[in-house]
Image (cartoon, rainbow, N blue to C red):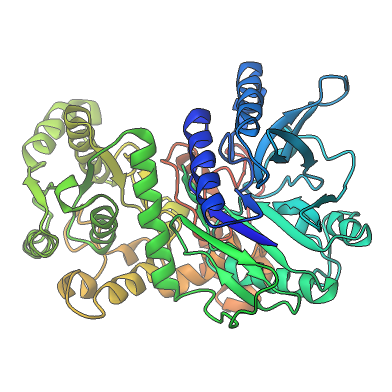
Length: 546
């Protein structure tokens, strides 16, 4: 069977635009003499549609468009993800996450998703019913087992502990499937692609069937979809893999012999940079932003965010502003100017000192002679936030916030100050990883000035300040944070590994205490298996303290 893989990038809610992409891909598939053209999960409405699913008009528009698409098909099959609805069932939502197979001018087969995930970033139980039946469909002398994303993530031979009591893929194999097709919208995190391949390969080796795994690409707010669609032969060998982080269209012939593909995942640095660049590019494009704004401090975080923005939107579409105070070092301005020159971008230099002095004067009586403390420190980033929001409003810039995961975790960022922004670009990248990204960027020549890379981290809000005045060294901090946030380890388990009880207790306490800040922060682009955002849900008001 000749399967035309359409690894395409939808926009949530753009039913007309997504339908046009489906028909364009279908036309390409016909030109390639495909037997069947395949698009990813919920492609017609975009994934994840969230509460749009609860709107009757939205659901009706999706189904009407699906029928219109089907009416334009020939003998070549077209398979795409869509919402379907059962109007006769009076129990539950009656709405399904479905794969629709059309040919000869109409819809011939619908297979809905059986395994409905309800963990991490997934909330499909809120919207969708589980498939009532799992079937196969005979088409072009093959018996196709069609499944949707999670349905294939429950193989008994791969998972020691399975989430679900049923295995829809095994049911299709038992019913005589000769070819497996899985349409997916699997969110990216580093290491996920390798895990996908190992799981799919194990399944295929045992079932001895060719498999086309067609995955979505693109970014939808926090979630990034890396594409990298995989086609495996009966031996479980990877025959073809789609381009990561970009649209790709190609034929997989289940009868053809391919050279085994070995390259599945690149280095952490390349993967994460590519994913974040796609995240910024799609957030901007899909929300109508043409230009980005970054507050450039002279530190490594804002330098990396600026680099990502330039590669996402082009140097002519990125503007930076330096906002020094009397505490800003001469090197911070000089280093920022060097980065600006290296990247060829536009900039402003606007001092916050006159406004800071005036605010202190105006608040003097209200402060009632109390000594200076973190209050005065926080006024400075809040002035910078005011400047940035004003420039964003006036010029229509997408404001990118520059806090890294270590800062967001520990609250080492000022609410309504340096947390201002529409998108937290590096909010899922630890500080130690930021240095790895900088060194990777500089692998051939200096782009991020070495002075910035080698500088001792400082917020520069008071004389001789460093980050380690308030936080443990980043090497130690990030190890604790990763165990707590991503490995879900408890206090005692972390202490048994780190061997520094007081440091662990301090870090876990400040992570929990700063939940209120994270609830008010910009969406975080997800590149790890547990990012801040709606994939991690903890109460603000609570008394469970480590």
